[in-house]
Image 1 (tube, rainbow, N blue to C red):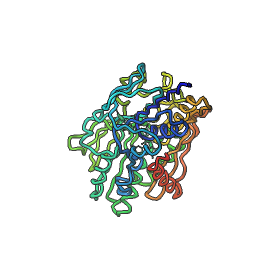
Image 2 (cartoon, helix red, strand yellow):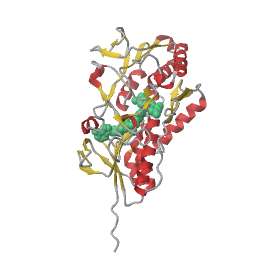
Image 3 (cartoon, rainbow, N blue to C red):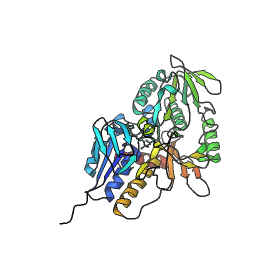
Length: 385
Ligand SMILES: Cc1cc2nc3c(=O)[nH]c(=O)nc-3n(C[C@H](O)[C@H](O)[C@H](O)COP(=O)(O)OP(=O)(O)OC[C@H]3O[C@@H](n4cnc5c(N)ncnc54)[C@H](O)[C@@H]3O)c2cc1C
């Protein structure tokens, strides 16, 4: 009698953009003898990319999330559990629901926020996660006049266009409400120029687009401290400013379980092979915000489009290795939306791993790109992205 071949265990840590696509793509190409599981602390996942629209009341709260439980329909086990530690040698992950063994591991735990890195942050607003965005939405719904500051502390942070996009949306929203003349919008970023990763031209273009809309951009001026009442910000260029609303983009860091596993080799983010997204340990991959992939003077941005694509690639690589079939290589391509108003968006990004260096651009804003953004959001809710 032939012995039954024991299936492989594919374990995916994190059910965000990257983890979900890794699971779906591995599952699609593997037979049912192999198990594909996702562990996440939260059953509900929210699309951060909707937060800039959410805070100005242009997205419905009930339509910003997706339940990871729905993945069961696709043959993927979802385990709602806190991940405590990852043992690279014994190949198991310890969680609040016990230990899970793996043959293939995908680390897709994203970036954690270090709220204490900017003292006083807890007194200010944010829109970098769903709960803080809801709080800011309530505040803006009764906002009539005054200064609004959007301030990032330190790179890298998720979606570098997001603070710029949010300022443009606040401009558009204030115009619609007929209060624009009473609203003073400022962005503070730590980088010497905006969208540096997208190249010189994109940087110049967005700078003049902001200026034309009366939005003041302060560069090399990351936020360093916030007063007890949350209304005075202090910046790395030595300046300080009062505002009715200060919204902070927190400092990002490696999730503790990943850092303690040793997989990053004490680097700030997990280094990977840029073609396979494999870490220094065979069959352990790191995708999305948790990794670092150098490109020119920068790294591939921390954005959902890249995380999703990396998930697709790694899901197929794992399936290919198990099935002994061809495996794809990661190509570093991705474009993000940058809403210019409630009805128009531009596309920014490009091909980041070209041999000759990154090939990137920022398109002109258009209604059609906003339509594509809306479809993207719908596709995300339906697990297509
Ligand atoms: C305001 C804002 C706007 C954005 N706009 C865009 C945009 O327009 N386009 C775009 O492409 N990207 C955008 N992004 C960036 C995008 O959201 C992230 O880059 C993307 O979510 C990263 O995907 P990921 O899979 O790497 O991690 P995540 O999506 O962050 O998923 C990580 C998962 O791991 C889980 N997790 C973490 N630690 C643990 C633990 N210890 N135990 C259990 N579970 C754990 C989390 O619950 C989470 O579900 C935006 C981000 C923000 C904040």
